[in-house]
Image (tube, rainbow, N blue to C red; front, side, top):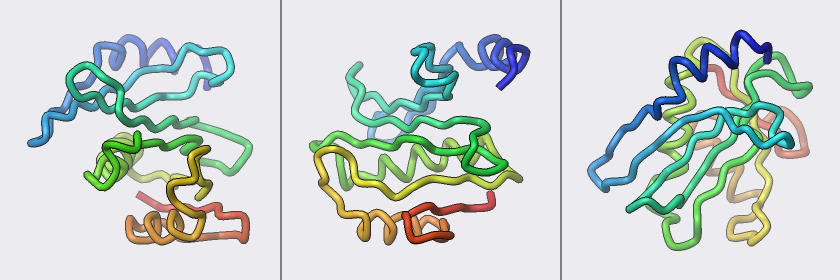
Length: 139
């Protein structure tokens, strides 16, 4: 990601793009300034000011030509409410015409197995392309 692109995102997007759903979950988007994030774009879901879910996306990576969803997490007490779907929908809206990639990899709490994650992502239109759980979707 070049500096001009980052400046454009900051200028146009840093004013959080807020969308409220019927559940009063709020989705915001910003450039992650943590040096370890490599300027990833972060999508957060808040409820009453508390971060309850997030997705992290690298616009370009060594994993392919397109955007790479490098992290997706929903806190235990908010799972099963469609928040992962909302996060992926927000990302897809921003990357129409591109191929998104992700890896079905259980989070540290291992609430879902790799196989369950593959089933979830497949139901959302992603297709596996290797035995490591890497998946893609043209949006």
